[in-house]
Each structure stands twice: as structure tokens, then as C-alpha cells.
Image 1 (cartoon, one colour):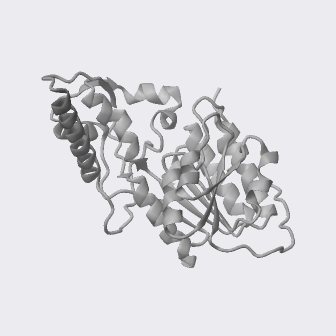
Image 2: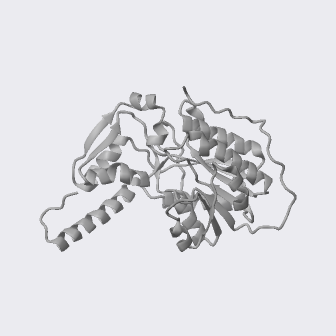
Image 3: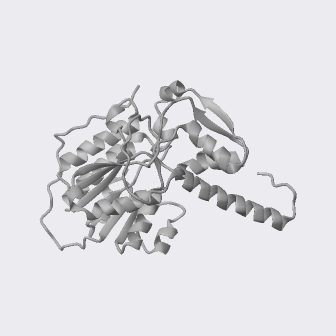
Length: 318
């Protein structure tokens, strides 16, 4: 049975508390700080002089790298709303990069958890809320995660919080594990026969543009889309990786109709959605996919060559 999420624009929001001790505009809370995008947001914020607090779920392996960078780590869990308020004390801006784990019910974090976080932010007088969504999520209600993202956008807009909504297309970082590494290891990669084009971006560029938007008050309460300078099909990405790796890939093609039947497209390919029209974010110095993958393959192939020389072996097996 398909997942149904009701976007209630008449939802009751907690009343904003009376003004208390002013907080510095540089005080931010990053939710989802250990993720692919979240960690780049943390690094960029620290580089720009922000006081960074990271909301991290209690975990067996602590997120020590965030502390090593200079951030403060606080334990909280969006699936347990009672843990949220204490993490927001003294915070000016929330940057929400969080998404649920693959093994969790999709509603737990991405809908119920986000609603609880927005309500707490409103109640505790948070000054600004930055939410990362998915490009064209409003056009694909049949995909559960996209429908939830769209509902969360509307819920945030109706909350009265000052906000920025940023819709994203695809992460270049995700292509390393999906295509680059399997091709180097001579393993099969999964492709589709769909003409879908994805305008991938480096998460470092996304982080940089996010803070440009955060500093620009004219963008408050706006919906933005960040997209790379060119949109790529799956086959074009595989062909590029083959050229840079200097070897052919073994491609297993899955008809897009089968992927749609799973109703889990955005779970299989994080942020890479079935979209046709894309809004390119016009900005100089945006890393292209060619440059990003070329740097990766150049570095990894050099390391493999050095390793081969050190081992004095004629062959390296992956």
C-alpha cells in the first residue's frame, strides 16, 4: 500500500516563547552533521568563523572528527522529540541536512522528526531555518521521499519561521561508490535505460553557496534550486568513468520501469531524482563533474602505481 503523507497547512504550531537572552547570529546547529552534505556544511561554517553545534544521534562510534574540527557535538534524535529542545538552547540558525537511515521507516525522521524539529524551533525562537529538499519534489507525489520533502517544505513555510529552502539535484560524492570504485575493481555497475539527466554538484560547492544564501537577507523565505552546470545521464557518467579509469565497465542495465515499481528510487540513488527540467545555478568556480572525477581517478591511479612500485609486483588485484 503506498505511503500517504497529509500536508496540513492548518497545523497548530507552538507559540513562540517570550524573548530571552539574545543569541549570536553566528551560532548555528547542523542537523545531520555526519552525512555527506552535513560534514561539508560543518567544515565551511567553521572556516567562516561560525560557532557550530552538531546534533548527532547517540552512536557506538562517536563523531570525534567533528570535535577535532572544532565543533560542539550534542546528542539528540529526531525520532525522539523529547531530546530536541535542549539541543536548541543558544542557537540562532538551524541548518537541516538530516535524512533517515535506509533501514528506518521513511516517515520516522523525514516527516515526523522534521515536524517535531520545526515545532521546537518555533517554540524556542530560532531565528532562521535552512532546509535541504529535492528538486521537483512537488512533481513526483508517487515517490514517497519526494512527497515527504514537499510536505515538509509546506509545513516549514506555514510555520512562520524565517527560512530558506534549498532544493538539490545530485551529489558528485555519491558517484564514487556507485560507479568509480566498482569500475576500478572490475565489478558490475548498475545502470538504467532512462533518459533521466542529473545536474550533479560537489557538496563543497553546495556548502559554499548555502552560506552565501544565509548571509543574503533578500533570500529569506525563498525557495532556491542548486544544480550543476551540466546534467548527465547514467550512461554518460559510466562512459566518463571508463575513459578516466582506462578500462571498460561491466554494466547491468535495469529498466526504469522496474525501479519505479519498487517505489524506492530515491532510496537507491540519494538525491538523484527523475527530473527533466533543471535550473542551473549560475556561479563561477562551480566544480564540473569531469574535473571532480578526473581529480579522483588521477589521485587513486597514482596511489595504485606507487603501491605497485613499492610491492615490486607486476600485477595488482582488486
